[in-house]
Image (tube, rainbow, N blue to C red; front, side, top):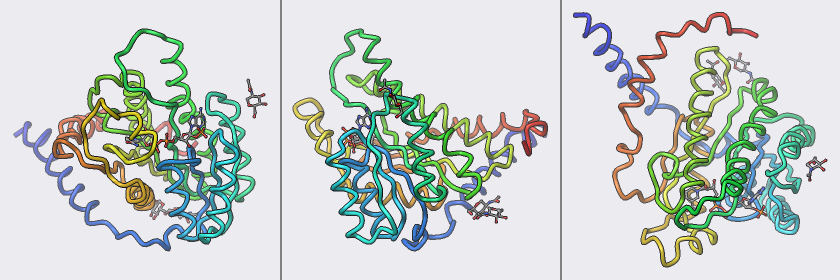
Length: 292
Ligand SMILES: NC(=O)c1ccc[n+]([C@@H]2O[C@H](COP(=O)([O-])OP(=O)(O)OC[C@H]3O[C@@H](n4cnc5c(N)ncnc54)[C@H](OP(=O)(O)O)[C@@H]3O)[C@@H](O)[C@H]2O)c1
Ligand SMILES: *[C@@H]1O[C@H](CO)[C@@H](O)[C@H](O)[C@H]1NC(C)=O
Ligand SMILES: *[C@@H]1O[C@H](CO)[C@@H](O)[C@H](O)[C@H]1NC(C)=O
Ligand SMILES: *[C@@H]1O[C@H](CO)[C@@H](O)[C@H](O)[C@H]1NC(C)=O
């Protein structure tokens, strides 16, 4: 009986909740109309496609990356596609001060923030790990620490707008992936941090959604160059991928899985983890953290 009460009912609850949320409202492009959105790593690849979709939906966008010339082009394209407004601020996410000041400036330009889409990464090379803590640290700073800094700078604005944080990750952030040790570590870190943050917000009633996007291989120039001659896998289109990322954020989904996975994605979703997380949440008392 105790087993039933302690375990079976909660598990049943999870499945009912899952059913309820998966039958949630449908995505409409108008959901983004007039919304104020930041996109990082938007000078090329998936980030650029995200900016273009947002522009076509009539959102305000501020994009960032290091290459100023490429960003200028993205901004002028966005205006042509119908963005409510489009601006860029160039800089490197190796510089955490830049990251923080960037969010403040972007918020000022748009007069607030509804969605923060974190997508940039340090250049990836597929090779056996050969030591080198310097490189590992840089990868951690660009792919993980800057994500934390950008989010913390954005949260005051996102609380005001009931906004969303969207974090772009990878299958390499859910499973072991040889030849990508540092990259994989940085993506696992994002899962640990942002999934914990999501639980905290849930428990302390902060209405900022956190969406983690798990992508398979996508046909961006850098990825295609990076895997050439090393990994045989089918890539999915970056335009479609970018749209799924926006949808997941707009629908406030916890996780988005997109790509041609070698194995069914429900195995990657790790239902066992979901169950133990759900059960352990009941042991916390967070009353004292609510409303401050
Ligand atoms: N493509 C795939 O197969 C694949 C698979 C799984 C997950 N993902 C994820 O999807 C996201 C986008 O991937 P992608 O293939 O589109 O990458 P990408 O085409 O290589 O674009 C990376 C972006 O990050 C920027 N960037 C690089 N270093 C930076 C730095 N130090 N500071 C600030 N910005 C920097 C780049 O611009 P600048 O060089 O101008 O700075 C560029 O805009 C990443 O989070 C990646 O992990 C991709
Ligand atoms: C980091 O960025 C800040 C703000 O943009 C800038 O003032 C500072 O000079 C940068 N630091 C380095 C080492 O480039
Ligand atoms: C945020 O959500 C709360 C609760 O649903 C609502 O009362 C408030 O008006 C919302 N604020 C905005 C800016 O949407
Ligand atoms: C959180 O904000 C969203 C978007 O404004 C709103 O639809 C939802 O009802 C809010 N949820 C709560 C619990 O306030």
